Image 1 (tube, rainbow, N blue to C red):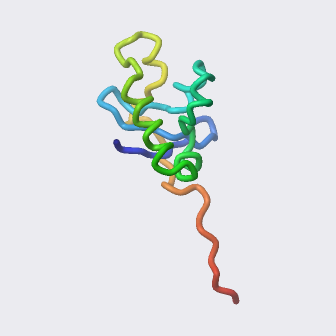
Image 2: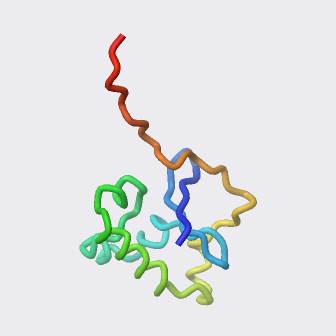
Length: 98
């Protein structure tokens, strides 16, 4: 599973690369609030904080999302039109003083 961050309307978004395009995870989760209880991460920070369990939830979610369904097409972005963002939105703090 290939993950990436991208910008959309000034917001940082988590994407999953699929053959249909880049799945906008937050957009796909929006109509399914019950999945928040299943800990499907909507951001890279949530994914990193949730560890292996969060990765498993995301993998399951992305793998079961119908992509041939007309409504599901709204969750995919054209990779050639995206403005990609850094992998980590919050850089690590330096412990060096000076």
